[in-house]
Image (cartoon, rainbow, N blue to C red):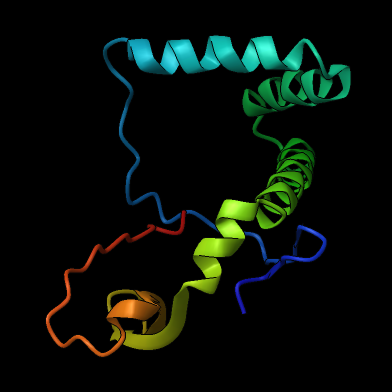
Length: 144
């Protein structure tokens, strides 16, 4: 189970502990597209004082590194994610795509950090299920 309750948009997962696999120091400038997205997000927040208040609080908490602040950040992030998941699950185009797709799972063994089977979700368009030569797109999340 992914830990996401699609009906209510709830997320029920244990806290992820980073292994610092991608602990790079930031250099350079923020990309213009990212700046534009930030500006667009700020504009959207003007219509929702509650959302703006939550985003402002998340920005404050990002700068703190104590356990209490981290836990509050996680709680607020999960609340925001729950709202987004709920809206996605109610999206007509998303639901149509889900109806046209079959999801299967497989497990890939790994030993880089102890023995563990990594769960892999495979999404196949229903009209390609019987094809033996299909293209693949692989997305891997580092988990931390």
